[in-house]
Image (cartoon, rainbow, N blue to C red):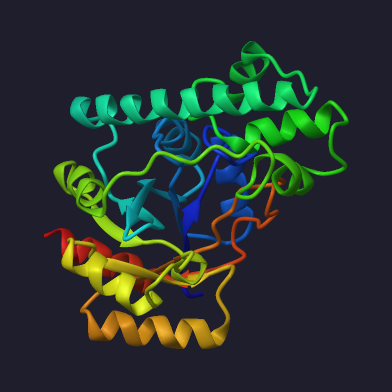
Length: 277
């Protein structure tokens, strides 16, 4: 049986809903040989996932997902095979986490002006030791009966265009790539189809990111069609980029895409490993 992997998985320690242990269980149940834990601005789930996978023969690839901005366009950059225990990297993520916390507090302030009362304590109790995000706020809005669903929380209140939206802090691509490189990782542009284009094409953005040091592109993703995959494979060849892919699983949240929705050949993982040498 061919080995397969899912290289884009989130846990409840960023904006997913599954624990690291549950993520590993799902991976095993779906026949995955390897998964990458890629929480937003947070590596807290990696160690517990490795421990949970120890006896299940599931390889855990340490990763992260960082947010950057190029020419007024938001892009997400995945980092694979990072040294998640590096002290410098931990401090950088902590700095980003503080900015995320301030953003979350500002969203709560705006919600209170709309007669929606969620305390800071409620939010940070829910988010726990990981990275606080809008999904945590959406979960509380739904739990309190303020919205009929988590997705409505985004469209009505906290998503881009919502009444309480607050702009997100973003690194430059060079900063994101440098962070990943300094801890031994490989940087990959995430879900290129979802890049919110302003005045450039997706290829223009990918070309700029490749120039800034991004070394791969997420060709396979739960939002990508076969046509998208073909186009992004062509970009990978043109700009000499490694090919990756993953479900972008967040559990039962705003997207409800589960682990193994996208499975890639393990050969692509091996290609990433070879590029580390």
